[in-house]
Amino acid sequence: MAVQKRFIAGAICPRCAAMDRVRTWEQNGIRYRDCVACDFFEQLPIEEQDAPELSTRVNQPREEEHDNSVQPVRILDPKS
Image (cartoon, rainbow, N blue to C red):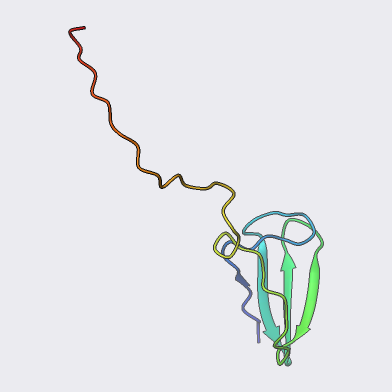
């Protein structure tokens, strides 16, 4: 029986930092993940609850900050 491997959307490879190249699958009570862009490979027991969370675009803080201050709008007169 073939094991279905699934890509993890937004995951960043811990070795080569390529995004959307990490895939995961489970087989015989062990969780595996690898990167198709480099030779990264890791296996973890499925019952492990303290596994580090994969870095994704969703769980990383944004580098840019939005300026929420109020600024007046100045209307320019095109005739002057």
